Image (tube, rainbow, N blue to C red; front, side, top):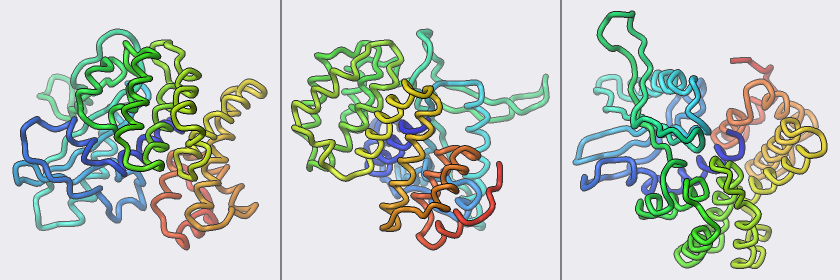
Length: 317
C-alpha cells in the first residue's frame, strides 16, 4: 500500500493500546505486552503487525493486517503470515503452548456492497470438514464518522476521511479535536499527516483532500512542514508522487516518490545519506521485493546489519 501502509504501521507502533481497544471484546481487562519480535523477522520482516496481549489474565496474540482493498489474495496473505507468526512464537518458547491468535483485516477501500464480518481461506480437500484460517474483517471505509469517533481514540480519528458520510464540516471537527487533544506538536503533525494520507485514498469520491490540507494549515500555521518526523516525509513523498504522476505517468511518479522516502528514512536511521551504490540497491529492492519490505528492513535492522543487507545480492521472493 506504499505510503498508507507506512503511515498506519508507524502510528500503530506508537499507539498499540488504541489499536487494540477497538478490536477486542468490550469489558475485558486488557494488558498490551508489546509487538512480536523474533528471529523469524530475518525471513518475514512484518511480524510487528502482531501484538502480544493479556486478556482476562490469559496470553493472546492479535494480528492486524491493513489492506487497501479486500482483494482475492488477502486470505492467502493471512494464511502465509500466520505460518510465520506461529513458527516465531513456537521457537521463542518451544516448551510452552502457542497463545491463541486472532487476525483482523482492516480494509481501507472497496465497493459499496457491505463486506462480510469474517473471511476465510479453506485449504482442506473438497468435501472434507473445514480446515484453514478464518479472520475478522473491519471495513473502516464502510463505517460512519460517528462510528469511528465512538471508538474513543485519536488513532481511529485518522480513518474518518474514509467514512462513507465524511464531509468537510465533519473533518473540520476532527482537525479541531486532534488539535485540542494531542499532547505535543509532533503528535499533532503525526496524526494530521495520517489524516491527509487517508484522504488521498478517497473510496467514496468525496474529494476532500485539498480542503483538508487547508484546514490543517489554517489550524496549525504550517506545522506539517516544520516538524521533522516520518509523517512529514510520507506527506511530502505522496505530494511528489502526484506531481510526477501528472508529468511522467502516475505509477512511475509514485514509485520514485516512495524511493525518495526510503532514502530519507535510511538517512534518519544511520545519520547520513545513502551512498550512490546504496541508493541503487534501495531502488532495485523496492522494484523487486516492494517498497513495504524495504521499509521494514530500514526500520527493523540495526545499522551495520542494514548496510550489509543493502550490499548483498538481491534475493527475489
